[in-house]
Length: 106
Image 1 (cartoon, rainbow, N blue to C red):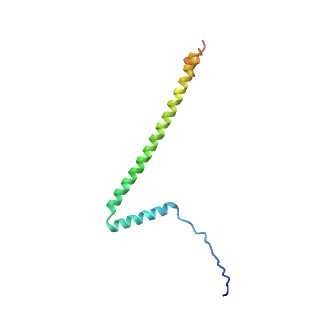
Image 2: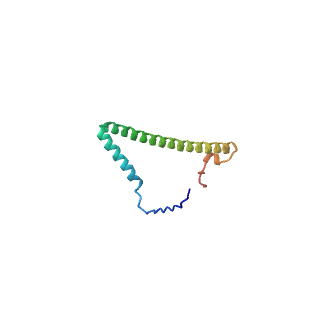
Image 3: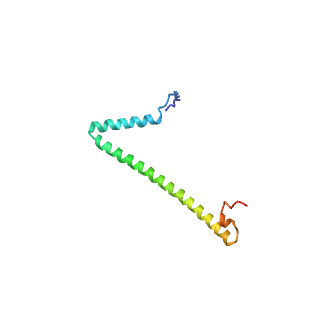
């Protein structure tokens, strides 16, 4: 048996790539064309509406959770300040009565 050396040359061209949205549009148009051809356009529109409603619902839900968490942090901070001021009152410190805003000296 004889061995033969093989040399392979690969030339890479710097071709511009399509943006990501172009692939998405191409797939969406293909799906619409196939759905139209098979008479599934109504089902496809219904599925798209359900999908969009689910995405919007999830977004709304996460926004509500974030708002609730922010409100809980604010309430926790208020309670901590109230506890500190109560401790000052028990210790006879005037900061407990007036908090951050003591009365003006006369």
